[in-house]
Length: 380
Ligand code: GLA
Image (tube, rainbow, N blue to C red):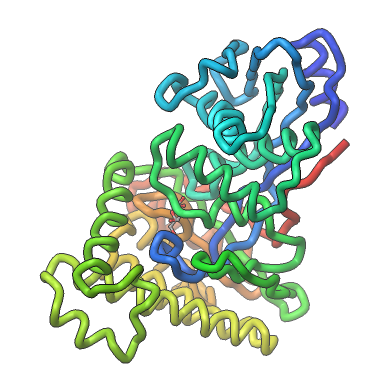
């Protein structure tokens, strides 16, 4: 961390007031449910966005990112408006804008950012960037914002300032997860609980396979899928698809146009998968998560249609090599796959996936074991 302090001082000519960290996440199960008022079950990963910050009193916001464009971006806080900032800087700027929009009297700052959350990998590197700035501002200005309020604020920043109509899962994972647990969250009530995830105790590990592909299709498709779900809920006279039970599903499908049926099928069955996963984890039956992951992937591939050849291959190769189950995690159209594997087989399963990628002519995936990590916090 001394590197970050030194880098801040070299960039801005003084010491920062503090350093904060906010993690990326994997989602165990509950994909494309958060904008349907449904359930999610993410866990933070031990990769974080970190920010060294020093408040300023002249209304200037200076932003530098080690993963950015090599220059300090200088903005005036009162001129921040949706569409006014481009590239990586829009995420931290969006948070400062959202704080002011929410009535918090916050000003500018010097911000030095770095992150080891893989970007474009479906592991919420953007949410980590938003949340680390949100928590730094919260602490520096003594704002009364808990983990949920911070996440909602970061989500609003992304929706209204960046223009991405995401749900709240990624931001909640980044602010509210705790070490050694997954967060079972009801995105309607914004209530949840930490579900202990003692993988090592049961001889298991979570293997993350970053396919390193991101299909452009994803950008517009996410908004279209969300709109499709909202249209289906409207046609069914429901506030959200969360309100449809598995028992009501067949009758509801009959009342919908063909193109909306698979979306509804996925969301309803996915919410049940989250509930089943939580029941098994609570009972200490961690291995039972495996088949739920694989069933979730089939639903995303065949019904929701957000998987892609690379994620499908990673799932199939991991399962064939001995994983108890596997699925794509995150929004889809590339990104990462999560596999539940016996600890002693982790290396061999990762190698088998890498071999399958080479045989298919795909580039090498990046693989790592994910231990459920802590949510956003002050480092120094
Ligand atoms: C992205 C969004 C989340 C969620 C997932 C899909 O990560 O940011 O809000 O909708 O996709 O589950």
